[in-house]
Amino acid sequence: MNLRALLRSSSALWTAPVWVGIVVFYFFHALHLVHPYAEVIGGPLWAPQQVTIALLYFHAFAYAITLGLATWDGGRLKKDRVRDLAPSRSLYHVAARTLMPAVGAGWAILLLPVTMRLIETRLVPTLMALLPLFMSMGIVCAYAVVGCALGHIAPRLIAAPLSAVAAFYLVSKTFTYSDPLWPRHVSGMLDTGPAFGEYYAAPTVLVPFLFAAAFALAVAVWWIGGPRRHLWRVIAAVTALAVMTVCARTASGWGVGGGPVTAGHAPARCAGSTPQVCMAEAGGAIEKLDAVQREVASTLRRLRAAGVDITVPATVTDDVLYERELTRPPSTKSTWSLPLTAQADRPDGDLTGIRYAVLLNSVTFPCRFPASFVPGVSADWVVNHDAAVLWAAYEVDVQDPYLAWRKSEYGQIANRDEVLAKVQERAAKGRALPTLERRAAWFEQEKAKACRLIPTSGAGSS
Image (cartoon, rainbow, N blue to C red; front, side, top):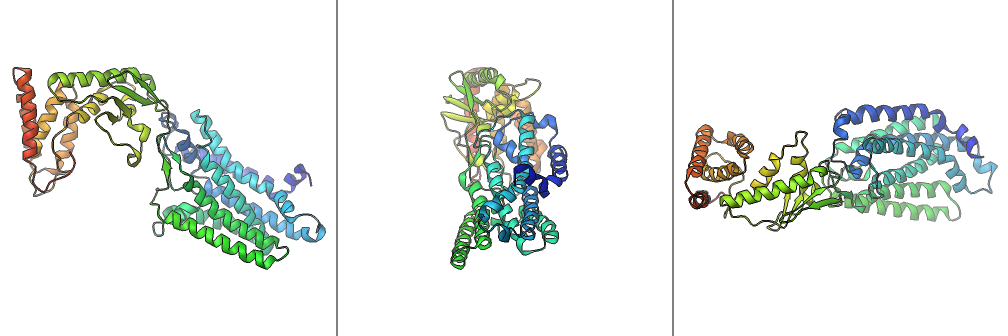
């Protein structure tokens, strides 16, 4: 049977208007329901993220359609008595040709939204960015094998629709699993989304593929048979069970959304020196790199001129390059990680957020403060701490965002209005001192006093 005749006789062709219509509807409705088009293309744009987002609604649908179509076509093979009519032909070859349209339908359901999303965002993917697509395409083949065998043992008129609905329900339902966790990671509907600058690590995409492939291989061996078929069936079943168990045990160690990823792959561009500032090329604000570098450098100079003791870092990197906090290298004296893209990507071009980020990294204390305000635990340190930082904030004109942030934190303090007034009063006194030396000395004294007022059991974050 040639390809044209195969397509004409396949259920994939006459059901195509239904599943293509569903793909198009979900792409333009569901994928833009939460994030409108303007927000989608606004960035930061990262191809692995967009591929994963595009596939989110279609993993389960692709597997379900493939299983249903393959079950129907497998039943047709049984009805046509292919085993009897062509005993000399390889059943593997016959089954592969018969399943081509079903596999093609499953692949189309995956490829259509990915292609449309990449066109929409104008991104050119790398092979690493397409890993989830390749994984799902492999799993589609596994579902086709299972469907073909199912069509031989059950009436296709009943088995095809029921198997499709069951597959869709079971795969999509895994997103709700919390105990056990492993079904979330082996179902082929990826539970982990890569952040900006991340790729999936090999286990994240290999585990679900191997889980499905092992089961499909065992089904294929059982269905095809051949010499010593009982022995091969036992071997295939044991092997599949072992592989699937290893996959489940591996995935059980991952948390919700915790599949392994590798970070730091987004390209960056750097400018300037003392410090050198590096921003993500695809972050959406790279055209402001020079302005950001000047703002960072001038803010550091102004703080040093005011008497703030700062070790100027050699490099300031964009924290969007390591968007997930768990994978982000910590800031050091020589390398700072600041939200450069997040603060620079403003339509009005205001770089106040850059100065504010530099301030918070520049003003350090020789002690650690409680992570939060606890009822019944003294918070006397907060006045001196916040007065010192507010004094420095005035030096670089970021007092407004700092005060707004602290006001939100004071909500946990009973006398928050008095605390705020005291903080502003002390900062004003420090600014009113007549000489640079006295202002710098006051700043150091405030920091030291804040540290002395920390409760002995109040260790937390600085």
